[in-house]
Length: 270
Image (tube, rainbow, N blue to C red; front, side, top):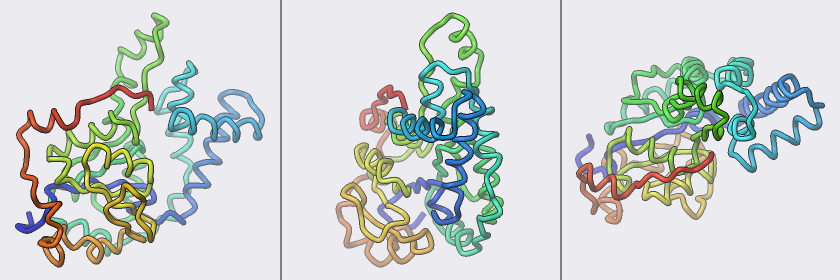
């Protein structure tokens, strides 16, 4: 680890963060969700598009909304349709990204709302070995309760639909922090979503908004793309500015009890 760095861990989002947001995967994902809703619910194309927008607005994702409303949708069924049909060939290999990730001396955690299969395919296209990360927090990590027997028992008993945990919910950020195992104030969080960045900042993380030239209110840094990481945040490597940011460097690694007091989990329906 860089001796003069104010960071002990780097949390990195995947989609539109490690690869550019202009690949076309976003619009393709929306089309796939619309088609899934049409096929699953038997609604028109216009109704499906309107539902997708409303489900995202009220529940954070279409899948979370469908489950909350009581529809019988398994995450694997949903992800295999909406992610399995994405044009992954639009993601180009990025040797520079691979080198930068390898050079980061801190603990590195990939932190994505996406499912593991999508994560693996995206990294493969980027030419990034999953092993470069010390840990991965993905959909399955945050939602083990959606895959076990308890889910089926709850459905059979007519209980409340299980909550889907996704960024920017508190539970999701806490999941990332627990895997990081570091003081939030010494953890750098990179994401393209201003909502996710705001959630991270609320829990004390240092934050970097990717894909933007201007910082949001809750972002400590703004990177036009991940390739600018060394130039914009050289403090990761303990150089060129690490000494100047005294607000970063005052915090020492907490004991586990200190971490627990900082990130008390709160149940939120994502």
